[in-house]
Length: 152
Image 1 (spheres, one colour):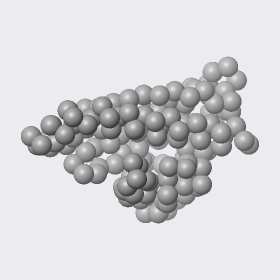
Image 2 (tube, helix red, strand yellow):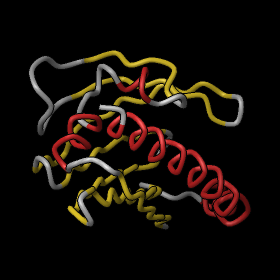
Image 3 (cartoon, helix red, strand yellow):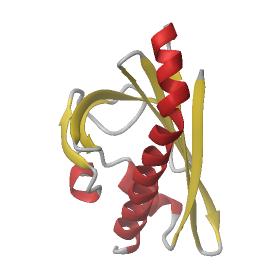
Image 4 (tube, one colour):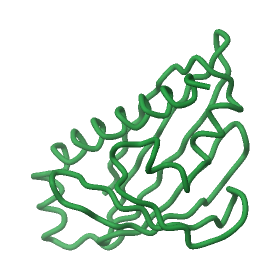
């Protein structure tokens, strides 16, 4: 049971500049209004294996999720994973140079790892609503990433 969505934002900044914003995990709480806090769990520069805990408030509820970089190809793409509440979350950022700027595409997927009868019913009833709120939050994240990259 896979739920996926993809959004693209054109950023008036180079792919390298956009990459520096999306790969700045310690600074992401200052860049993205949807993130309450970030706690780094690994040291060193952004790359495969980088781990952190991110706290976000969505629909009035704060959730802390452990996240990690599954793939990094600077400044072209990166994939971030998280496991939470029986779901496997994947966020993939792709950067493509276009018209003197960058098309930043975020593809987000949620896959229920071991779907139970209840989780199937819940996803059927609330899956679309959940993806609506997720798309709204992701669009806001992309706009805030663009604003930060364009401000330098």
